[in-house]
Length: 130
Image (tube, rainbow, N blue to C red; front, side, top):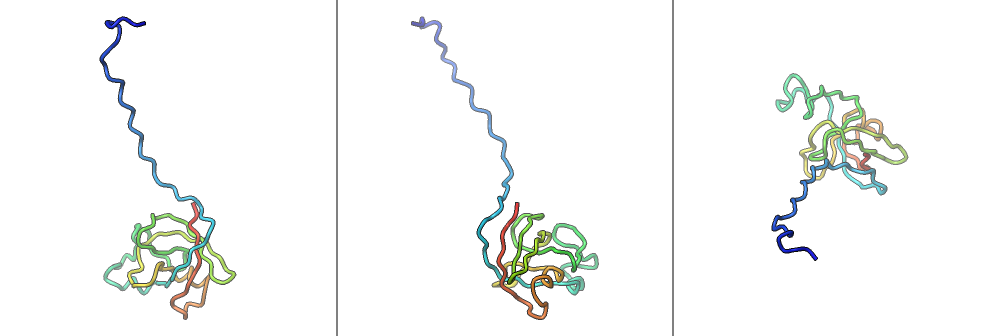
């Protein structure tokens, strides 16, 4: 037995706070479906983009790049989009679309890989990649 004088009244040290770990999205196994439209260099004349024609993440807009816009996913997110038997991996670099009922805004280059640009809006399946 311990003597009462040997027992301390000190509190145990508080645990070290855990550092916040950034969220990493794992590759999804099951595809989701969404509506997608496209935009091209004509947006450069739009007062929202100005003469520099930069995307929301600061890159110069390239209408032929395999890029897309989404309202809230993190910049740099890679997604595999499929339409019919064609699948393309693209990178998020802009914000939008701002039209009700649309989930993604593709660059002209990305849209053209998946469908004829005369269609304007298409339904795609997609999987978020890491």
